[in-house]
Each structure stands twice: as C-alpha cells, then as structure tokens.
Image 1 (cartoon, rainbow, N blue to C red):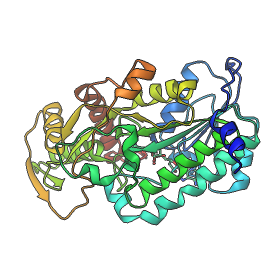
Image 2: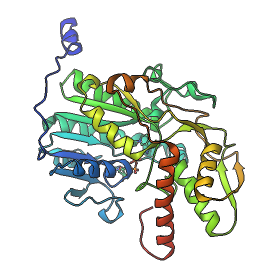
Image 3: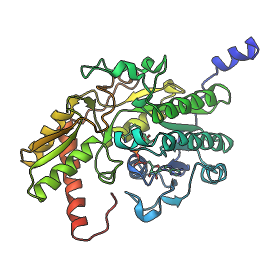
Image 4: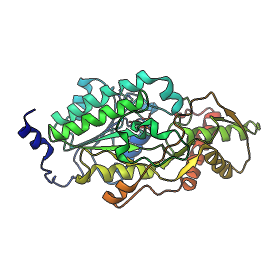
Length: 354
Ligand SMILES: NC(=O)c1ccc[n+]([C@@H]2O[C@H](COP(=O)([O-])OP(=O)(O)OC[C@H]3O[C@@H](n4cnc5c(N)ncnc54)[C@H](O)[C@@H]3O)[C@@H](O)[C@H]2O)c1
C-alpha cells in the first residue's frame, strides 16, 4: 500500500450517525442461543420495532422467542444467507458461533475454527447492505494463554492478546475475526465494535448436554445431587482454577453501550466481571443457595482450561464510566432458580431447551 493511502486509512474521520430510529432494522445473529436471544429481548424492551433474529437452530429449540421479533432459521456460514439476513440492516450484531464450555472447545476445535465463515460472510454482507454499525462477540479465549498459567492471575488487559498465543481453535478464530472487524473500519469505513466477553452466565442459556459452562453445570449437578439424594458433586480439575463470571443483564447492557460508543470503533474491549473466584468457591456459593453441603469428587483428567483468568476493567471504566457490577451471589441465585425450574419441568415430561 502507498504510504499516503496508509495514512488515510489510519486517520479515518469518524462521522456522526443520525440518531437510531425505533423502526430502523436491527439484525441479530445467533439469536436462538443464550446471549443473542437476551439481546433481542433487551432491544425489544427498549422499543425497537424491527428486529430480525436469526439462528441455524430450528425455532422450537431457541431459548427465547421474543414476540414482535422476526425470527428466521438460517445458517449464516453461507454467503447467500448472510446477504438475505443483512438486507436493509442499520445495525448488525453477530453472536453466532459454534461454542460451548471447556468440554466442547477442547474437543471440537475444527467446529470452533469453522465459525470464521460466519463472521467473514456476515461482515461482508453487513457492509454491502450499508449497515452503519457492526458488533462482533469475541472472547477472553483470544488472550495469550501463556499469561494464564497461574490461578493467582494478573487480570487481562486488552493489549495482552499480542504477541498472540490464543486458545487453540476457538481463541484463534476470535482473533482473526477481530482482525476482519478492524480492517472493515480501516479499509471500508464501516463502524465495527469488538467485545471480548469473559464467561457469561444466567437464565435462558445452556444448562445441560455438553456445551454448558461452569456456573450452569455446577447448578445442574447440585440440583441433581439433591434430587437423587446422592450428595456428591463431580468437579473438573482440582477446583483451584480461577475465573470471573458476568451476569447476562450486564452483558447485554455492555453490548449496547459498546456498539454505540464511537470512541470504541475497531477497538477490542473487555466485557466481563472482575470478581475473581475459584471453581471451589463457585461450588460453595451454589451450595449456600441450595442449602446443601456436597462431597466433591475431583476429576484431574477432565477438561479444565487455563489455570486462571480475570478481566482488567480499567479501559471500559475509562471509556464508558461503567463496568459489569451484578454480584455473583445475586446472579447465581437467579440462575439456580431458572435451572431448577427447567430440571423439574423436564422431569415431568415437559419439553425444555437444554
Ligand atoms: N457465553 C459465554 O460465556 C461467552 C464467552 C465468550 C464469548 N462468547 C461468544 O458470545 C457469542 C454468543 O455465545 P452464547 O453463549 O450465546 O452461545 P450459544 O451457543 O448459546 O449461542 C450461539 C448461537 O449461534 C448459533 N449458530 C452457530 N452456528 C451458526 C450458523 N452457522 N448460523 C446461524 N446460527 C449459528 C447456535 O445455534 C447458537 O444458538 C458467541 O460468539 C460466543 O463465542 C460467549
């Protein structure tokens, strides 16, 4: 590239958008899943009247079907489908990905890598459609794993992704898709936004079946132990691994704030809680909610991920004057209650989404 052209893209002028109208089309991909389903509900409650939600899952399997939202069953790893989905969009939120907890991402790296097709086609389709804003859900798994080998972690700040040594499969897909987002701004001028989510949990998400993450898995195992009167709980690893967990309401609020902040165009930012807990502490919190004490069976051979991971929220506090602040105790109580309802509804033969 000529030096003058390079300067031009580096210094791209940020033009102010007209205000978003309530009937502007918002497209949300991955909306049959946990976070995007909750995001569709969030925008609907804010009064947006034209929301197009899409997921490859059949409609009866979506966690949330939001009344008044156009819901489509389509695979957005195909270019044609992405063009159809993005037609007329003013804002596009891409949260579709083949993903799950450690058990899934350690065993299905190819599926995780193939999600690169989703973002590749969605971002191009959004740009062709003239969308004003494009949001991509990245992950803390994009961070250099060498910085996460001690449970007493130093919280990860945005610059810790490079030099890159991301989580195999899933993390590398996120890094390359982030890069697409950055270049669509620099070369083509579409405003793109990238949030690196740290573990998200809450009602209306995966709680069984192999893709669930630690909070949901431990809630379900606790409920099962009580129900079966076998007061033991299997724990993956030695329980000393540390993580932070963000409640879903904070996540969707954060997405909205990030995607509408021009200070964050093409700039990856952490979206996560900074309340660090070990898996043992997480299990204890759930025991307190359930009013039970369980014997822990540690499995040293189970997938356990990095030793420790936390979100450094210095940057988000500086730019947005906000950070996720729902305490784990509050969020877990709501999550436990919801999973308990699902568990007993399923036991009574009712069809529930796992
Ligand atoms: N949940 C977390 O803790 C967490 C953490 C970091 C990043 N993320 C990212 O946030 C996003 C949403 O995660 P989630 O927890 O809601 O996961 P989820 O599995 O509940 O939702 C993802 C949805 O994408 C859909 N999907 C997958 N491939 C598709 C395709 N080709 N076409 C259409 N739909 C497709 C799935 O069917 C699923 O419903 C993902 O990009 C994920 O990588 C989540």
